[in-house]
Every structure is written in structure tokens, then in C-alpha cells.
Length: 460
Image (cartoon, rainbow, N blue to C red; front, side, top):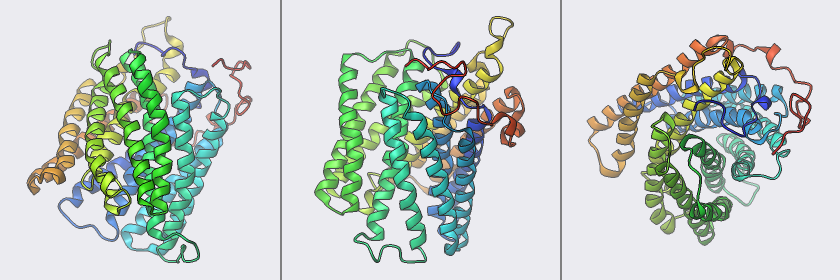
């Protein structure tokens, strides 16, 4: 991208350190999660390692990244000031502390401490939902992205208390006096988390980012498919979660079909936009092709499984063996591809945009290392491809181990590239991002009043 994409209100964004701090800590969780995955292929970890690993990736990496991205880009996309910068800071530390304690308790077998970690995560997620939700309510009328963000925020708000109750139930019965069991709450919790909180955010953001990166516009067929998606996907999430929570198989099946039809329509639109791209290869376009392929493959695997057993525990991720395909192929490559633009974009706006026209400045895509980017793309593609295919085609253990090593190397290259970008181009480097920087995070005079820094209501 040679400049600021048209229509974005960068004067509304919070201080650079707030979203970047989310991204840096999320990268830390990614390294721990992928490293743990590699270790688990050759050794047995103590306690409930599998559950800890899943939460480190889904909450620590993907959800924390989403929290930082929404805090940054809801104001930018919607043209409204973030409701509270202090809350945007607090949400990260609450979730980070809670997740760290939660994962440690799972690994150590100290289940009595799970409610403490769960309570901190609940508080952090609710702070995030309140803060971004208050910001989003000032954007009218909602566009495609904003509608999906609203759905995602609602799901985040429900997922957190369900998760807290599940944490409490490890040591103190939490469902004996109600009409639902732990199994049913777990099914609804996982459904709302995976397909509501995470995937609805991905769908909303990906459509917006895709048009920016491809410079392609949806045509009449695309608009019809997007209408179908908006009718089916959000409703499918709610009906599937309800059917699973009540263990009513026909209801869950209807929700599953609606969800898959909506996602298939969306995947076709994204694929058509990629095919119609009028720009050269970029890290985002290359990875979004992987996302579309992985999403279509996951839909094909999930459809017969959800038709037959929509409320079975093994069908939480669709096909029993499709967990890595969804986690890495869809969520992982969306996050990695998007961060290759979001992180340089934030830094460029903060450090270089004011110099444009007065001196020679690097462009957004010049801030990261091209060689590291291509290296991490191919190693993560081969590595995660092998891990995703292993349970489906029965790869030998040596191939699974090799795939895990390649995936770890690819993730390491990606993390190094992003951290180098922050270190070399950020005004205060990584240390400045992680420090409190209270002087830059105080509430602005207009924060929360829906006005721009110039005191003029933003145009929609």
C-alpha cells in the first residue's frame, strides 16, 4: 500500500503503544503455544496440557490479537473515537494475567486456582466488550464489517461467563442446581468462542481488508452472496449454540447448515476478489489464498459430520480431525497475513505520515523484511499443512514431527520479522511498547464523545 487507504479516519485511532502491546504479547503466546505443540508431538506434558495449549492459542494468540485490532481499527474504520484508552490498556493486562494463571494451573494440576484465572479473563473480556461496544454504537448505520463485529462482541460477552463457570466446575459443582449440564455448557461455550467471537471477527475484518489489499470491488454476484452470508452465518451461530446447549439435534443441525452455507458464500466472494486482484503479490494476498482454501476444505469436511452428529463432542471443530485446519489454516493465516499490514500501518502512521511530501520516507510494505516474510510463508505453509493433513491421511510420526519443526521455524521467523519492524521503526522500540507510557494513554478531551480531534463529528 502506497499510502493511507481511502476513507480511513486515522485521526481517531488510540496511541500506537496500545494495539502494538496487544500484538507483542499475543506473539509471545503464539511462540509458547506452537512450541508446546511441537513438544507434545514427541513427549507427554503434565496436567491438562491439551486444554492449556488450546487456550494459549485461541485466547492468548488469536483473541488478544483481535482485541488489539478491534481497539485500533473500529475507530479507524467507523470514524469514531475509542470510548476509553484506559480501559483499552486494562483489558490486555487482565486477560494476560488471567490466561497465564489459568494455563499454569492446568499444567500444574492446581485446579482450585482455575476460577482465579477465569475471573481475571472474564473481567478483561467484559472490559473489552464494553469499551469497543460503546465505541461501535456511535457508528451508524452499520456496514458489513461493523455488523459482524457487533455479533463477535456479543459472543465474546457470552463466552467469558460460560468459561468462568466451567473453570469453577472443575472443583465446585456449578451446574447441579440448573437444568443444563457441564457438557451442554461446554458445547455452547466452544461454539460461541470459535464461530462467534473469533470467526465472526475474521469474516468482518477479512472482507474489509481484502478490498484494500486486492483493489478489487465486489460485483452483483458477490453482493448477493454477501447478502446470503449475512442471513445465514450470524443466525447459524446462534441456532447451533442453542441446539447444542439444549442438546436438541434437529435445532443444532439447522444452525450448522446455515452457518456452513453462509461461510461457503463468503469464501466464494473472497476467492473471487483474490482472483480479481489488480496488485502484485503481497504477504496478505498470499496468505488469504491459504485461508480461502483451508476454509473451503474445512466446510467440506464439517458438512457431513455436522449433518450426522451436530451435538457430539467430537464434532466441536467440525470434522474430528479438522481442528488444526481451522485453527492454523483459517485463524492462523488470517492473523499472520493481517499483522503484516496492521503493524507496519500503525507504525507508519505514527512515525512517517507527517513527513510525506517533505522528505523521502519508506512505504508501509518497506518496514518489514521481505526475505523473512517469504521464508516464514513457505515454512508455515508446509509445516501447518503437514500438521493439518496428518490426522486426515495418516502421515507417519516422523513426518508429523518434521511438520511441527517447520511450523515452529516459520512462526519464529514471523515473530522475529514483526518484532524487528517494531524495534527498528517504532519511536521507542519494543521496550517502549511494553512500558506503561501513561503520558500517551491518558484520555483525550474528546474521548468518548464521538468527535474527532478537531471537534468535528466524523463523516460516515
